[in-house]
Length: 277
Image (cartoon, rainbow, N blue to C red; front, side, top):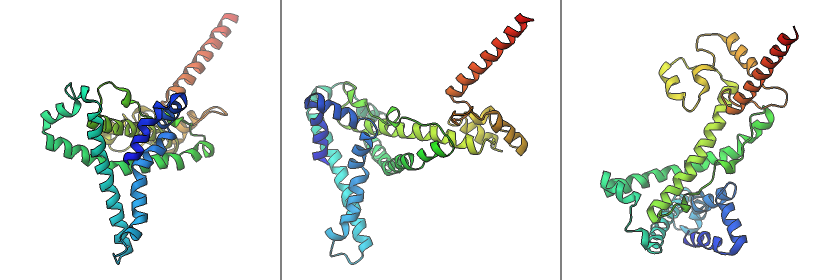
């Protein structure tokens, strides 16, 4: 883990080629490989190596679990050692304003550190979501013409460039940097999926209110809960794209642009007809 971190620090110092590799590692798909190396990779490797490392354990399942836990311990220790080393290498920022110090004063050091480490439990979850974005969604862009996306525009990290962000603050801000991109891309994919297959408003007004931020179509575009299937079909047909177009969610900016152009063209045509008369 520490050797991998050392390589990440070294690469951008190897001239133009190194900087190009470093940039690639900061964006999908390069970032996905780097994240796997530091997060899911050690856990998987630990579980596989467990039965060989802990050969004295009778249960193969228990040995695999011990290998998995050993990998997690190694990851935690690596983060802690890297944090100290990075802060020592950036001592000029230690006496200035820092996120960790401000939050320690707000909720207490023990609570703050316990909470931030507790959030690390979500790392495997986000990694699985990212794998799903690779496996589940792309075929839908061909099968039912859901829109394609450039993952690098969503899944990337850049907070390491922020002046004064070192050690503890940097590692957790990079975690959030990675996580928010995955979540936002997944949300965009789900907006397309939900509107394409199930454009029916929820019967619960409270659920509609709670979901309208992540699923904007729920507020006005989807059919009312008690309207009947004829209304659902009517709305689907009204929003079918032109040949070659994609089935993005109905309130997507691209849809609004197309609708505005259609409206403008229709108004121009009506105006021209009126002038001819």
